Image 1: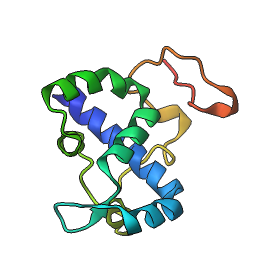
Image 2 (image 1 turned 30 degrees about the horizontal axis):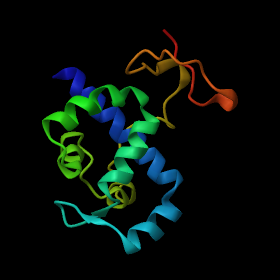
Image 3 (image 1 turned 180 degrees about the horizontal axis):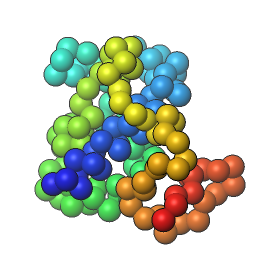
Length: 129
């Protein structure tokens, strides 16, 4: 269970970093299409979030097949991954902890070992063993 809690925490931080960097267009998108969150806020559609977090954490795709086989409801998957919250409220209230952008190179521990080589431009970032 500790692995999954760490995994969802990393995914949450990556989602918040992405939302912060792309907030302008995401706010426009959410003005027309958004989902209400349990705390009364709003978030982008489940499909958008799942697409983004799978792109940001490619190893998540290894878990998506069994997740979808167990329950193909995308909103339920967002709940399981701990992403059913209002990212604007979290960022505005400063409730986000240490994020990917805020970490130092020396103290980053990769969640899963990457098999793919880094691409030009530094993304994805290289992970130390």
